[in-house]
Length: 280
Ligand code: GLU
Image 1: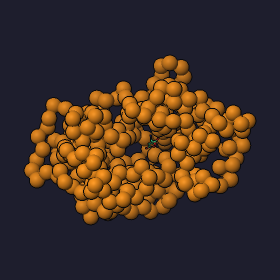
Image 2: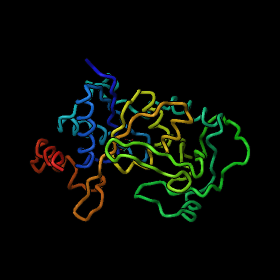
Image 3: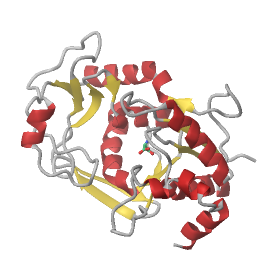
Image 4: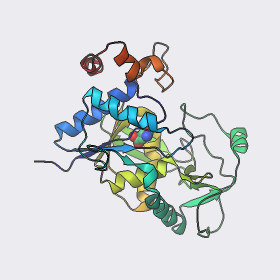
C-alpha cells in the first residue's frame, strides 16, 4: 500500500547534474522508497537567464541513468515528465497577493549596487546577503495590480529564533534579522524568487518531507516563516551533507569533471557511484 509519504526531486536546469546532486537525489529516492511513498519530479526553471531546456532534458536522462524513479509529474510527453515551475505562475501570484494583503511583504527599490555596498558578507556561497532594511515601510502597503518592476521582500520578525528538527543534522536554530534578513520573494524582472516558489509548490504538492542539500539549511528557516505567513503546515526536513572537491570546496555545476555526463563518458557505472556515496 502506498503510504502518505510524499517526497520530491527539485533540480534547477542551470547546468549538468553532478555527483553532489546524485547523492542528494539518491537519498531522496531511497527515503521515499523505504517509506513506500510517492516521489515527485519538479523542474525549477524559473530563472530564464540561467535555465536551458537542454539541461532539463539532460537531468531526466541522468536521473534515469542513475536508476532513480519517480511516480508523479505532469503526465505528458512521456512517462512522468516533471512539473514545471514556469507553468505555475498563477499559484505564485496568488501567494504574493495574500502576502501583500496580510502585510508580510513590501516592495524594495534598492539597486543591486546599493545592496552590494551595504551587504555584510553572505554566509555561504550563493546565500542572500543580509538586507539592511532600507525600504521597510512604516505603514501598510497597497496591493498593486502586479508585482512587476520591483523586488518584493518578506519582512522577518527581528530576533525571533526559528528552530526545526532536521532528519540528518538534528536540531537547527537560526535567528531572524541576524542569520538572514528580509529576503526576496519576487524579483524586479517579474519572476517569483526561489523561496516563494518552493514553498508554494511543496505545499501545493503536499510534500511531507523535503530532502535537499545542506546549503539550503538557512533557507529552510526563511521558508518556515513563509509557511506560517501563508497558513501552510511545514513538511519534515532532511538535509544531506554536501560533497566537497579535493580543495574542500563544495561541488558546483562548474565542476564539469564531476558531472554525471562526464563520469558516464569515462565509463563509470551508476552502481560504482552509488556504492561510493553510500559508503560515506
Ligand atoms: N532547485 C533548487 C536547486 O537546484 C533546490 C530547491 C530545493 O530542493 O528546495 O538548488
